[in-house]
Image (cartoon, rainbow, N blue to C red):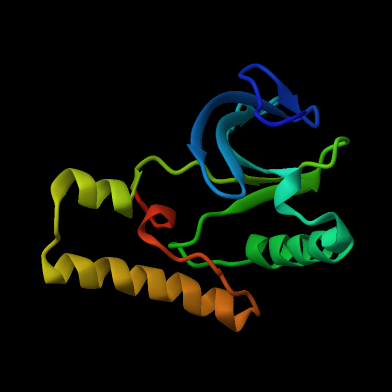
Length: 151
């Protein structure tokens, strides 16, 4: 599978790609469903050029380590990770819980500034999730409103 993915393609024979739901600096996020279980999921495909070839083996080991740790996080404010791998053409992918909602950036663009109590509510949830990740040895590296989902 090469980026961009196409609706109807199947990732590793397990996840049927449905529609693109996001795009960022490292890759794309697609709505998908498990081929046999018809379970909805979000699939993040990481662009091969975002992983420098000289450091590829080290970075892939880090992705694998982080995926294994992330899959074991239990905070209700952390997206569940279901699967992880590398396609035959070298594309790293994550299969995650599909969250129905909008990111914090979209929420602010649509509704404007929030009341302080609501901001504190979001911050507490974010801090709860990040504290567990940090305690497990993970660092997010890209906390910003567009990466915080409001569901």
